[in-house]
Amino acid sequence: MSTKPEFYANEIVIPDGISVNKDQNLITTNGSNGKVQKDFTKIHALIEVGKERITIRSYGNRKSDFALVNTVHSHIRNMIKGSTTGFTYKLKIVFAHFPISVKIKGQDVYIENFFGERSSRVSKILGNDTKVTVQGDDILITGPNIENVSQTAANIESSTRIKNKDSRVFLDGVYIYSKA
Picture 1 (cartoon, rainbow, N blue to C red):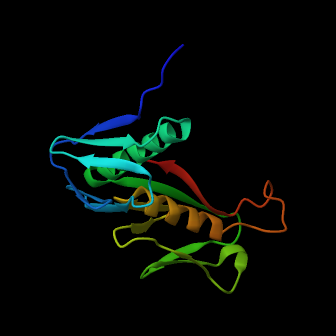
Picture 2 (picture 1 turned 45 degrees about the horizontal axis):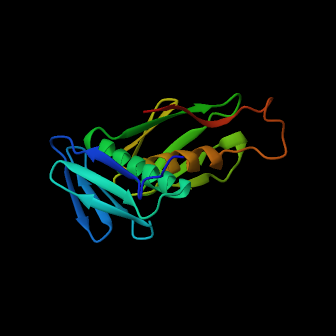
């Protein structure tokens, strides 16, 4: 007969050059690449920030508590990685006949001449730190927050989805091909 531990805990070592602050359950990481904030107030776990490590503890010992601790651990690890190196998504513009042009205006990406359409398709850029650049047939999305970068890439990809046609034949669109 085995006994379960009273709670689950997981630790993250804070690397050099990163400062982590906690205000109630709002975690902020600052690094050379930028600042990332995330609100953990609705998470039912205890987060303790020390000088060298962050400890995440659950209040129970069930599978869901174990999963919650590991999820928060992954979120904070991604915040630290974003503050140091950042995240980059690469998208490829693919067209067969009508040349697609992509333009960035403010916090929007305009996809023009998609399938010869007169109106341009628009997708949102999330976050103030997310940068989108167009280089030939490639679109580069970079930023410190993985959620904003990945959702911006998904917005661009889904705005060029073709409906009521065979997707094996009509391959025009913008597709994610690299995540780093």
